[in-house]
Length: 341
Image (tube, rainbow, N blue to C red; front, side):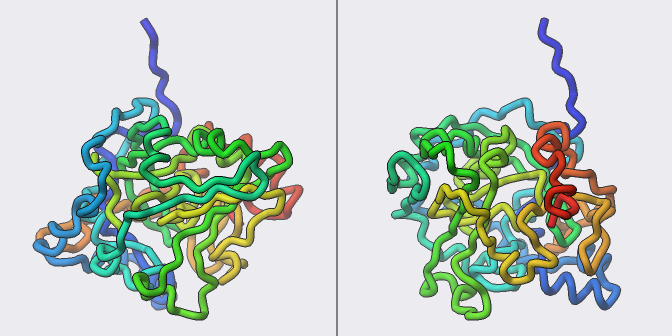
């Protein structure tokens, strides 16, 4: 009889976070400077109950509703409870729609069809594929993942989607390609935050090929057993759970394979705080706050506030070191970084 060995990062099924708990990075920094971090994470204002109910669920015109839920991959489990869907879907970081944490109302207006994904750069053949055709080609599953924000809060979410390695296989990159550069949508008519000229739109993120093909790198199309809501990144977002949350770009439209390390969005905005690697590391503080602990957000109370967030120790690589630590062996010596910048 096969024996399942518990991994160091395994968490129980009761452990995923509600989507409404995503905090604004700049507001968090302001509160931290004012000595109000505990208050910011303990009493985050959410939409009222009626609005929260409206926010939960897939986009109205998503044609893939009928294929959910996907079978859960039992290799990815959690020790803390899942965060509630109401939390995770009504309080979000999504700068394309503004710096407020309550951008879900505006984001829900974003059309998610038609939607195409470009694959270009150092590949055997560049291509553009419709999102629904791409989903049909991919091995679909559900995974329970931790999500750790650089702002020192965390959630647990049941993501649905496919391994990023499957997309890399589909793209057929040349052996000389060393990185995957990812780009999100650009539509200033729909996304008011993209009218902010001080940001380098579109949002750009990047991974090494080794990171992109690691078993944990996951391209997300759904959550909580249905297609993603727009505010969580529909119809396609990244989840790299060993990295800080800003690496998990939303609304992806382009994957470019290159031999040059991409200049990522937050690195271009403020590189001394938000670097390319962005691996979770409690031993290396953010320049303006500690990363040793985090506020775990699970649910909201009856009036829409985060209910009793629990302060817990942060784990190196967010608890996924067994799967990813080998990717960074010698990195600090070579680049003079601390595994996250």
